[in-house]
Length: 236
Image 1 (cartoon, rainbow, N blue to C red):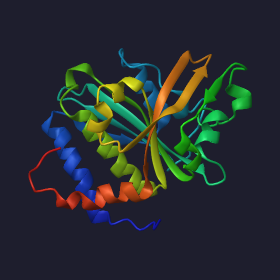
Image 2 (tube, rainbow, N blue to C red):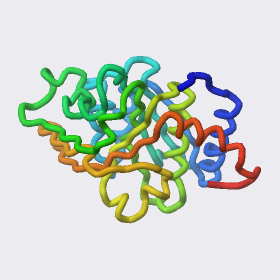
Image 3 (spheres, rainbow, N blue to C red):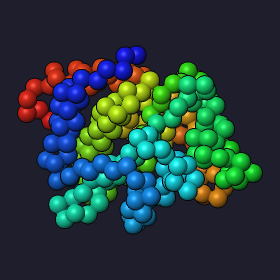
Image 4 (spheres, rainbow, N blue to C red):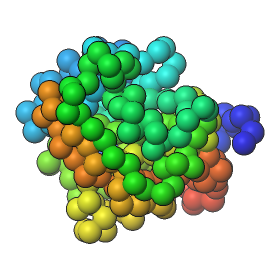
């Protein structure tokens, strides 16, 4: 796909969702230092530990290949977090990247436990290649749930990833109950499949059986470019 980004369209897209967050009492901030991110997330009592994908001690992220978003409430308390990173899968695919554990550890031979494993049976995962953006580690404080912030954040990270990387795909790994309760549709996730990541990381205490959700690069571009069809003053 073409790598040209219309900066005015992206700016309008991001401003729309930034304003929507502000209307709900949250100020969004973007950061790039993942050591700082891990330190911040450690202080959040209801958030589970950040996965090794976003921890510099297990999977360093080169400058420009990752970012995180934090939302602060009116008292400067942390109300939400989310992180994203870019994987270069030009010579492999997402299923292989997950099953090799390279999605989680820069050097699985050094950091993975002998019993660590990941099974990815989602059919589309084998077709996800090239520049691939992973959106994960989402946490939203309980008092802000049910107010549209999850949808706002899903759109915000899409806009940021598009503006920074113009990826060939974006993907996430999410719990099954989000599908069963219809939450994925509310977030605007167009595609999802079972078998995204059946994961066991012994030393991290992680046991997951997650869905795969994804967007193609063309679909991501369309989301941003057709945003101008929104009427002024409308809200997500």
